[in-house]
Amino acid sequence: MLAFFTPAKGASPNAQEIDTLYKITLYIALVIFVAVEFALGYALLKFRKRKGAVAAQIHGNTRLEVSWTVAAAVILVGLAILTFAKLSSIQNPPNSGSGGAVLGDQNNLIYASNERKLPPDGKALEISVIGRQYIWQFVYPGANEPDGLGAPYSYEEMVVPTDTTVELNISSSDVVHSWWVPELGGKFQAVPGYHNYTWFKVSEPGVFRGQCAFLCGRGHARMITTVKAVPPAQFEAWLAHQKALIAQANHEAQIARAKLSTQTGAGAVENP
Ligand SMILES: [Cu+2]
Image (cartoon, rainbow, N blue to C red; front, side):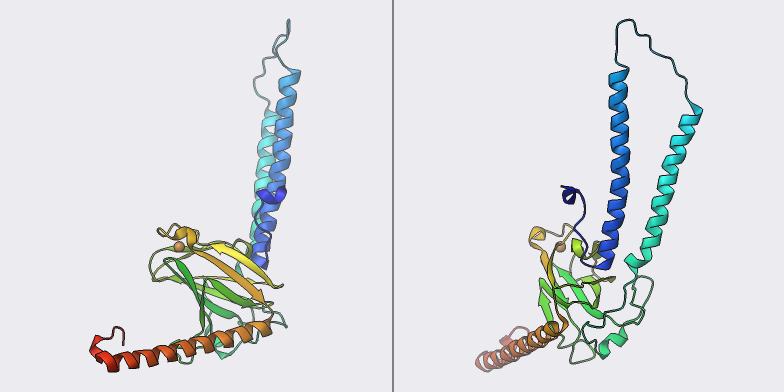
């Protein structure tokens, strides 16, 4: 029952901290709600209109008014302190675990900034998340060229290793989209010409569903995503396989294009 009112349980430390904060606030609010409703019900019943009863005329109660103002302020300050105490573990990613994926040289290119938080040891798996009408594309490290050519990629389903800090570099190739996988943290907008960063770290294998959270056009509702966390060895095998599949498809396309250009002349082939 309570699960209906609370966010999905976090599968990443940042999402888990957000979930904890939400629940603490919810429980405090619940206690106050029940107390207020109970007092209201009691007053309605106890002081209801009766024959011969004369209503007391009360003109304020300084002690009562000061105490409920101070009590509310104390709760607010307490929640603010708690939120700030948890903020750094929501914003700053932890190191990958010892069982995490082996991170190659390309990860040394990552740098930290105000928006871009890195684990203390600087080692993270960076995945570019590109929103487009109406599908998410994920580009992984492992390019053949420094300009990113030949990097393995996937659509809609992102595969990640467990026990590894995953940095997301979110952008868009057309309109504004919003990256949102509730179990892995908050929403982050994908804006053309701009980069937003977030991170997650999944400890156990699992599948986490998400949905574009910003109305981006007719196909917005279909713009779903799945993050699949698998053991690091399985991730590396998948990545190598994905790369081989893409290389093979590119090779076949090259042959097809060459064939087409001998038949019709290079000028007649689009995108030679
Ligand atoms: Cu969208």
